[in-house]
Image 1 (cartoon, rainbow, N blue to C red):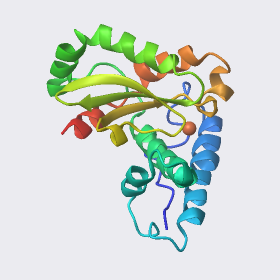
Image 2 (image 1 turned 135 degrees about the vertical axis):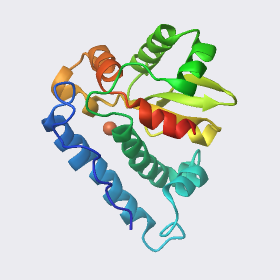
Image 3 (image 1 turned 30 degrees about the vertical axis):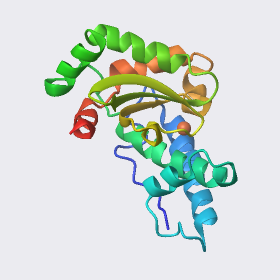
Length: 196
Ligand SMILES: [Fe+2]
């Protein structure tokens, strides 16, 4: 059985950028529904005791496994997203991450601009990501439930740009939500931990 992971902070901890109301729907309803759907889909199959990563990797791109892929990936993506943020986050990374951002993007400001632009420009539902690809950092976007690690990219941070992530708080202003997440909530400790 897959379980809904405990949120790493209180539901109101990311206010005012992400309200407790948004969190109660996004975590308590959307994320939970992906977990419930996944449990129903794996019941009695070889995937019942598999890891999320294994399910995602093995079902990616397979039309007859789209339901499994979408729900498993959305469970993984949302857990990764909650951890990509923290109260009083944002600011700039230090150490190895800062050095790699400088070498990969030409400085933090250029990186920040690329992360915001790429994430905001995802057409329809999806995700913006900072990933490690080969020896360099990259900013990428994915559609719907897609995850970078099925293409060999290691995720370091993500921002959810499905409308359910911001519509109650910022309505149609996706850019305002993305800017606020980057500047106030990004969890650079989590990114550093993922970089290793
Ligand atoms: Fe979401």
